[in-house]
Structures are given as C-alpha cells and as structure tokens.
Image (cartoon, rainbow, N blue to C red; front, side, top):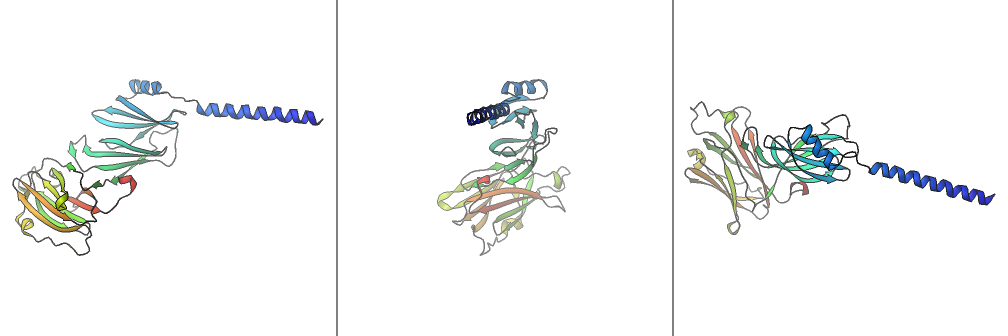
Length: 287
C-alpha cells in the first residue's frame, strides 16, 4: 500500500513539474520578433525604421519621420505598442530604467520651428500597461545640468539686446528686448534668445557666456553687479562688450561644479529671459 502511495506521489510531482515547465515556456514565447516589428513600420507607420533596443520582454524602436526622431515601446509577448512622447526634438535614449520608465536627452532643437533651445531631459513614464491604448506614457521635462568645463550652445538669429542683468543666489538672469523696438517684426513674443555659447577657463575659474550679434543696453553695461555674501558659487560678474557681441564673465567659487541654462518669458510683456544656475552636485539622473 505504501509503495502505491509513493509511486502516485512521484507521478503527481512529475505532472506538476511538466505543467510548470509548459507554463514557463508559454511565457517565453514572443508574439513579435524584430522582423515582425520592421514589417509593421514598412506597412503601417509613415516612417523609416532606424534600430531596436531589446529590454527583457520589451523592445524600444527608434524611427525617423519628417526629419524627426521618434520612439515606440513594444511588448513582444502581447504585441502591445505605445508611443513615447519626445516632443518633436532631437532626442536620444539615455537609459531604460524599467518597463514603465525611460529617460531621453534632447539637444533642445525644436524641428517644426527650427529654434534651438537649451538641452534638457525627457522622462517618459506610465503607471501601468494598457493593451488597448497607445498613449500609456506621459512625458516630464527635467533640467539638464552640465559640468562647468562642458561647452553648451543654443539660441537663434535675434536682433536683441541685453536690457537688464540680475545676480541671484545661485546664478544670474538676463532680460532681453528688441534692439529696434519700432520694427514690427520684433514682437516680444516672437523674439528668440540670441545664439549663445559657454566657455570655461579653468586656470582663472572664469565662466564665460558669449551672446553673438547682441547689443547691450548702456544702463545694463554700466550697472554695478553685486554678489550677495550668501552666494556659494559666484565671486564676481563682469559685462564685456565685444561688438557686435557681448560677453558675461563670471568668476566662480570652488563649490561651482555644474551649471544649467534655461529660458522663460515674462508673462506681462513676453520678453525672453536667460537663466543660469550653478550647483555643487546633482542627482544621477541629471549626470
């Protein structure tokens, strides 16, 4: 009797192992292969397949459309496809954090308008996967910080002049206005930030921002820029006129290791403002 019980137990165990193995094999079978995905882009999407990056049971697909780079996120087991919103910019993958979170770096160039803004990070996230939707993901803009020795350039062709400069606790702010305000083409809301480039001279601890083809208002040129004692990053600020351009020279303290450039519009007049801020350290996501 006991022998029969042992044999039955062994048989039952074997059945359970086979069933578990079969379930595992079923989960590992992919609905979509790379060839299947490439075929989808040839037949269904008005774009050109560039490459695919596998991640566990998912695949990130990069493709071109109207000179812009786009990304789709596939579940190869279910066939689900989701669009990743990267806002019509030249974005490239930084890291796949998990199946619900992907981080991209944008160079700031907006393809439809042709305007080059400051670089930034795009974090695409979703709460959960929805098979019947292609819009699971939402995008969040994150400031991109650079090491002070890294040069950054952005901006556009602009007939602008610096009208005001303010030293803040972490950096500086510059207000721009039209060089010829009587020109109807120089509306405040359409005035872009002028093309600018950063440079760092290590032996002098000097951080420079050059604004190309940019005038500077006499009041802004002659104003005394005071740096608060509490400012941990800036020792002094000087405005240099190098016609037809102008240069902002910032002598840094030792704590200044990273910087970030951004822009905003004054809501009342729509005038562009360039904002520079420094940091001692940053999170891993920004590096």
